[in-house]
Amino acid sequence: MGEFFGTDGLRGVAGAYPLDAPTIERIGYALARELTARLGRAPRIVIGRDTRESGVWIESAIARGIVTANGTVQSAGVITTPGVAYLTRAENADAGVVISASHNPYQDNGIKVFAPSGQKLDDAAELAIERDLKDGAHDALPMKDVAISADSALQEKYLAFLRDEIGQGLNLQGLRLVVDCANGASSALAPQLFAALGAELTVINADPNGRNINLNCGSLHPETLQAEVRAKDAHLGVAFDGDADRLVLVDERGELVDGDQVLFIMADYFAPRGLLREQRVVATVMSNLGLELALRERGIELVRTSVGDKNVLDELLKNGGSLGGEQSGHIIFPEISLAGDGLISALEVLRVVAESGRSLSELASGFTRCPQITINVKVARKPPLESVPEIKQAMDALVQQLNGKGRLLVRFSGTENLARVMVEGQEESAVRHQAEQIAQLIKELLS
Image 1 (tube, rainbow, N blue to C red):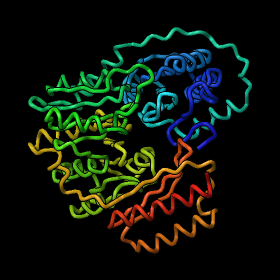
Image 2 (cartoon, rainbow, N blue to C red):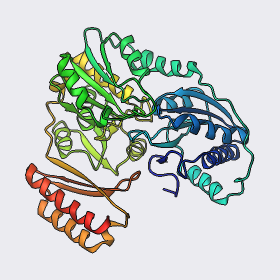
Image 3 (cartoon, one colour):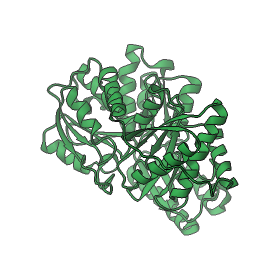
Image 4 (spheres, rainbow, N blue to C red):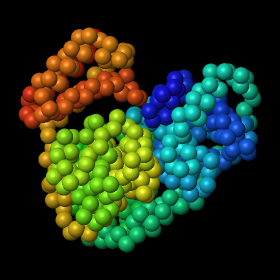
């Protein structure tokens, strides 16, 4: 990771450096210059954004930089992050730029760049952009003005891909479905998609005003969805985050179904049909021990990576596999898309429900979750944890105490000033106490 680009692109407070207009213009300029150097011609770039109020001026700023470097821009307007990844490939563009801070509050925003494959831009290109920014040679460069207007045909192309290709043969008639769009990028797309496939819809949190994205709604705050599923006696509910790369579900009883359970449901469906390549599922160190045990019972290996859907994808591409994801709801089907796509994930689960005739709770019933507690601790600094003797000693002691019957994971967030402490074991009260002890120590030493 460089100074600007973290594990999930560049993210920060909109309007504050490096997400101020002059820096964003230079990022657009540097991106177009780097692509020109690689391609030997001016690049074509697709841009999309979520519903944050800052997205409009950020899109204009990055477009000015791209056009000043002789690149051309196509705007998809408000669209999901994986929608931009799809369009970059489908439009034969040289890159796709997403303006979104995903599940963060509206004050934040971010910039993520996709390669034509639909994968995130490679590290070498990000570092080249950073070098260009630090060089400062173009700071006073006059930027060309550019008028941005969204091309609705791009949104329709993505919707048609979801409906006609991913949803081919999927009939949702008779299915009562509640959809929570997090007042984000899926607010227009998701209701159109599920209605076109015949579902009986209740749509909530699909009225974005620029400031209500992710606000007490969506995949991070599914309580309203749970209540609505119960109130409407729905078969299930789906919740997306602000840019719709995550999916969380709610079963017919109003109980949450997270990314680990989705991985289990899909692996259990794929394996007997010969669709689970290598008989392996790729997840991260955050996935519940219960997933590992449930898959093992079915002769399926769980391979763990570091946190981040980029790491999951890298492992899938390097060593094979047709299914991977994160507990948070990023699910990747690499044979369909190299970007985690909440809408695709929803369609895949709905297909299992429709074909099996079983409820979501039945499909997830083979998975028994081990007690797992995660505590987020605000920190002022992020030194290597092994370099703080008191923290290292406490962590080593807990690992010894767990004795292979549980897991401890402590890591820093890649996008926020947080340390995340996760403890997993056999007994919930013990796990909570253990996590609280480590979290308190980190708070005392690093806050």
